[in-house]
Amino acid sequence: MQKPIETPNSHAGPHSKAEHESAAHHDLDARLDHGIKESFPGSDPVSVKVSKYAPGDPRGVDETSHGDDDRVSGALRSARHAAEATAERIADSVDYLSARGRKVAPRAQRAVADAVTEHPVAAMFLAGLVGCGVALLAYEVATAPRAPRKTRRRAYGADEIS
Image (cartoon, rainbow, N blue to C red; front, side, top):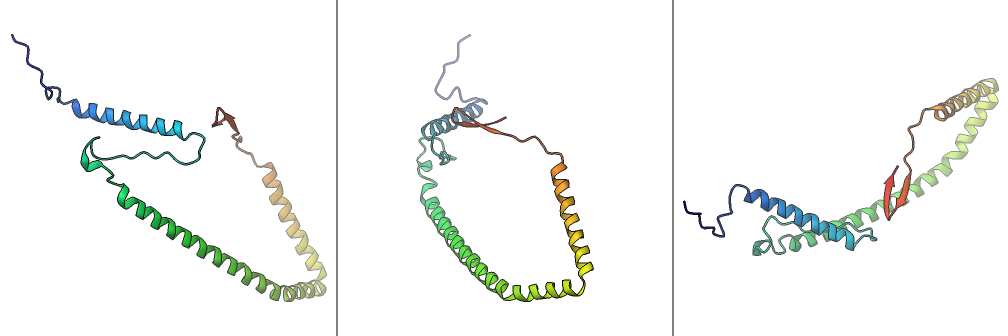
């Protein structure tokens, strides 16, 4: 019996797709490893482009780079604008609450002083009750069982949890 002639396409059997996916996965792993080694001391995340097209396919060249840069910069501008608006609102709220507190505080002090003067025993009882409540809370917090703390140690440039 004659041995079949092997052609370049004769190996394209049922395992070729799985082999191709495995090779693509290995290539992605290799690129990630290289990116991590090259940017190790930095804090920026590693960037690897993933394409749905095979390497060398002209359809996969810069398929995401054109629109993504514009969307990312637009989202960044929106986030900065929102952060600035939030900071302004917080500053306005602090100013408003401070001014309102300065107006209300003298009246509240007078009301408390009048109540204590009129009912000193009730005020003492209330103060003792509040003190007992605070002490009970402090005791519960101090005696509550705690989970063991995980400590972080630096080992060869990477965080290790022990």
